[in-house]
Image 1: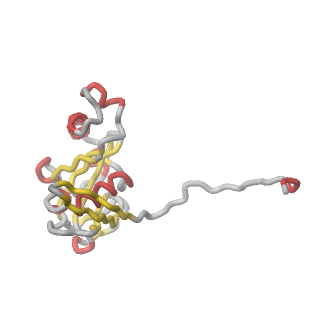
Image 2 (image 1 turned 60 degrees about the vertical axis):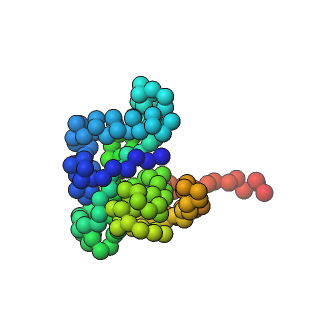
Image 3 (image 1 turned 90 degrees about the horizontal axis):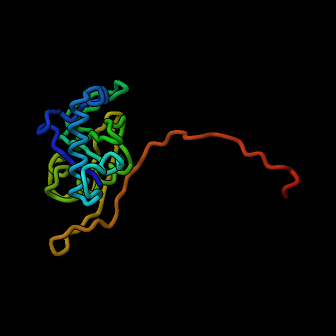
Length: 177
């Protein structure tokens, strides 16, 4: 579960990097308050006091239309390379890139006409979007259908750039076989 906000309605451009949010205790408290009340609305908790023990969900993200920006590694990304910007918080801090769980939510919301994510990406029917995040870009997509006024998501697609999580050796005694 993810709560989406319009960046400009909360005083941001949508191109912010970690230090702009994570160094601002007032902003972090505001995002946490939004997250906590969102958790109640989503039925994830029944009382605001439970929010602190459930830090992992929901995520809070803010979106904006595509514009030129510079990533945290000083790479310039032109507006025509992306459909929108998304910045997301996880565990009380702005994430350095994008969490997979939020990426799935972005793909889903982009596929449903009229959502904040869909509108930030230009609106209309969309099968996929490429969004800018603090570390670069990510392409996500979804297949969503409306049936009797309710939306059903049949599939979500995303790609991730891989990084080495571990390396090692396995030593098997020669007499094991």
